Image (cartoon, rainbow, N blue to C red; front, side, top):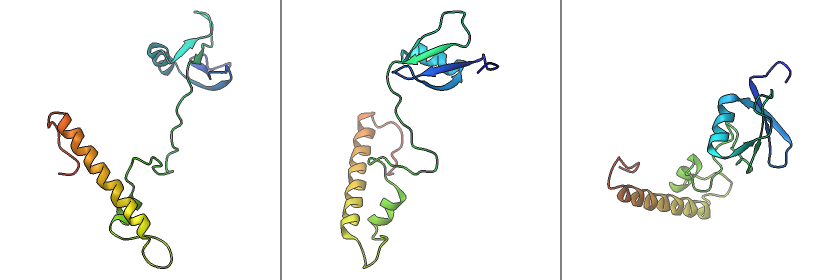
Length: 123
């Protein structure tokens, strides 16, 4: 980090070094209250400490892992296309249909509570 004085050293809640981040990202973390400054005002490199652990993000290309999202596999299962031997997996089909039906109910509530503004994904 000797030559990268424009980078900020990010530390986790326990004080262990995580990674260097840009000054703008560090300013955003400090302004939002998610981090506190460890270094003195004119000290370089700047060091900040997170006040809460960061939520983990799924890696790019790993697919959607949230149970609240509808995946392509859910859409295929809803119409009876399931992978496996021995025919259709009706448990998977019924679970996918229930998930899609629940999503439809949530999206209708969200559109009506917003005053009918915007188009629904189901229109």
